[in-house]
Length: 174
Image 1 (cartoon, rainbow, N blue to C red):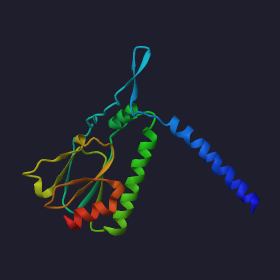
Image 2: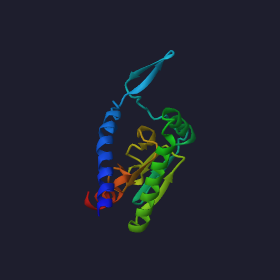
Image 3: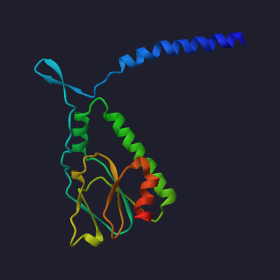
Image 4: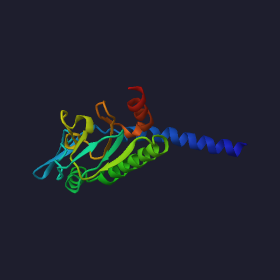
């Protein structure tokens, strides 16, 4: 018992001594360095405007649909240049969320058609094709994502992290 007490005591003492050092080193202000000439200065974080896609096609949607959209090769390279240090992890996170959302749709929402939008710029519901304005994917400042469509409702660009709640809110509650 006394050996266990000494081990726990040393671990707790180590944690208590290292905690202030950890917090002192975590003073990130959220500002990105900007380069002007040969000197680096701290400036405002970079803001990103989504690059226009190279495709001009339109997808017309008839059924209740879940449309997963992706960047084209030109947009993807733009994101890679904008966030070179975290592009791979961001892409991995989005693709994981897409895979998870797709699995939830297949398991619990079989009546919703799953559409992959990799080569279209516009989405429009069939009941709005003559009167409505198509949804321009270039106006969404997100590289990957999910949009829900149902006849008679406005499309919803949803948070894939909350897929179950978002699906229920769009297709059942609203």
